[in-house]
Length: 267
Image (cartoon, rainbow, N blue to C red; front, side):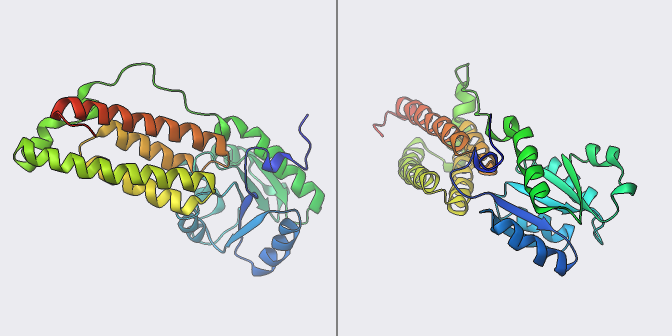
């Protein structure tokens, strides 16, 4: 049995990061110390719009406490946006409300909100709800990706004809390939170091660069693997990051071997 003291960090090698969304500063000031006392890191947002903007650049948020009665984008609408984005779809959400008797539980469920609490909660009750919600989302957040079972086609690995058309000659493509694999190998080293250090910001930046480089080189499979690794950075489970990095590195190796044969190189 997993205890309530360890559940919130069961899948993470770093403290749980919680985003608290409320348009009342006093509520943020009350919640922040309650949660930091239990080892959580807190990000606050005063609106649904601010919450979505901050989630776009904070890739390691492990849970959102969402005020339902927000001005502008409501808490329900913000939760729906979080669920619709593949990069944030697996972040658990708990609704906070001042009027629990008027709460539309069906609307919460349809928006992908896993739990709810009245704002005059007991701190122990809040932390228990956080742990229960994270555990209920463990399969979504911590399940490692399955390795590919079929060999990728040549077109999935590299659109060679497009490269040749873009650069004009095989010799130029050879030079581009040498530069590409040199830079990509360095990017993979940086990604591995970022995963080991749990540096999510650096990891996301490098994955984004790797995806861009792979797209420019017309390497679809590697670009898709880099994108999946970027999305995996949303997970609080370091094991999934390591698993997805292995898939990305395998895609790189397969592509390099294919290009070596295609262009008679020894990269």
